[in-house]
Length: 175
Image (cartoon, rainbow, N blue to C red; front, top):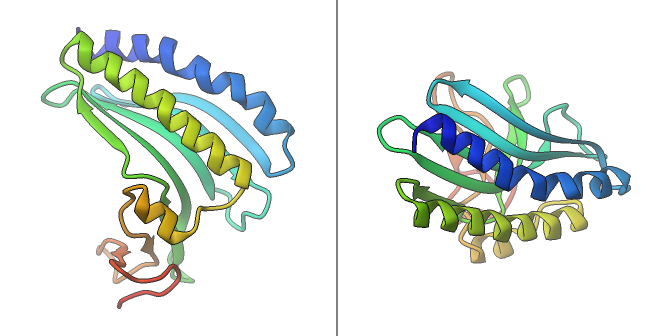
């Protein structure tokens, strides 16, 4: 299977699952915007999923998202994540990434691996919907118990990555 046929197959199997939820999420009082998308980022990178902007968001790009990222750089592979994100605002030093689980990553080199990826998507959709029903990030400890990495907050110096505050409580950095 080549990269383009993998993308086509997963668009047909994964996106209808979240499209069914799109109307319900739009009608909820928790989100001001809901978007299902499938976007090609280059010859060998493709992202697809659903993103919801909560009504309490202070930044335009603050979202809860369920994303599958497909790559074909050396081998075909994919990653699925459910996460809250806020853009990093340099002037205020604010921003965050709060993953709701450890995510799922797999090489997609044969039929069995692709079928497993599709099953993991269904599992992540269930998690996404539970988090969306709450309308805000899960408590830090619950996210950590689900295997999520430490929250990333703020901005360091120009050119440096945001800090991963291992063991820190949400909102408390380790500069």
